[in-house]
Length: 408
Image (cartoon, rainbow, N blue to C red; front, side):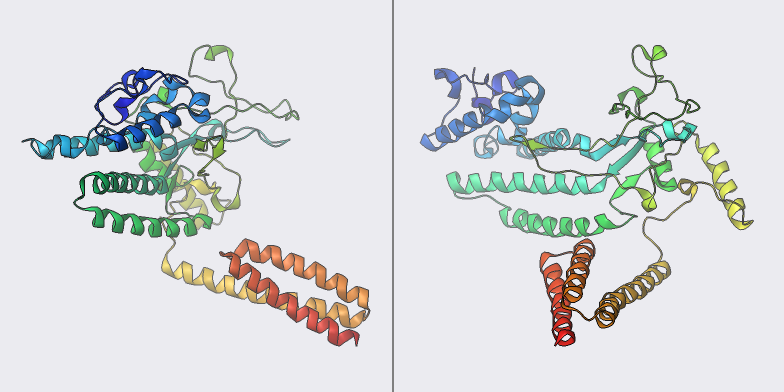
């Protein structure tokens, strides 16, 4: 079966991708233009016949491995003499976007629910539902892949035809997109990550509901997990599953976050995990709640807050996308004071211990313990490896000098 459709022709997966292990004479049929094109097709055929391709099967990933349509024919074979050059370019761009959407589909919107409750806990209605997490960072990864595809196309045109208009712009955009993604990675540690839209936040929930109402609820894919061996008391209520065949005789299985993991050769490449808001266990607003019910609960929350009563769960509070500037300044000041106190304790506590118990073994044990704890804290809070090594080395040097002075 022919594999030439990956570069020229072969619009269907059956025509564009050969059977795994098929290395017959027809494996490289197609419009071959020179020895370099034939070598390229042989290389692609080798990839398609590799272990990763065989592992997942031809039918499941044929569309992804077939690649975007923009690579099926060279623009110098189609567009130079064609009166519909702009239409051809637009179709190629659309084909690339559709291919990227297939590759990153699961990472764009993830569906999750609560794990099994702890012992003594009773399921509430809102805890048995499924929520959404929409990753805006996944869009940036799609953009980087799209720019990379343009650059690959430009490089092949430069190699075989000597020119590729716009390659400088594509390269500049690709570098800037990498820098933007580095900034997105830095914000991932924040509790209110602005690049994750989650149903754990009220306003995000409303927008997600309005957007998801356009689609059939049966298309939501949930990931069931087995129940733990230690079960909760009999008073724990379980909500029956109301979707899918045989649901009338089936109990609801708890679901966990469905993380998107793309694999190359059995090795995970990227993972996007949903946040846990404010350091608490994930609690979901009811999926079936109408906007009117949400509005009533918000009013209840505001009334309880103003009257000093016990407030409702945090997911009814309309949090902003990013914290206000005055709150950010307050948080920064609190963090600086906290770290000043912790830093002072790391210097004063070992000093008191080694002065009150002035022995060699006490000094060595105290230094080892405090340096180990300090190193873990530095790795947790600092961002780069050099910062962690530098801070740990400086703190170790201070304690070693103090041990040497106190024991002589």
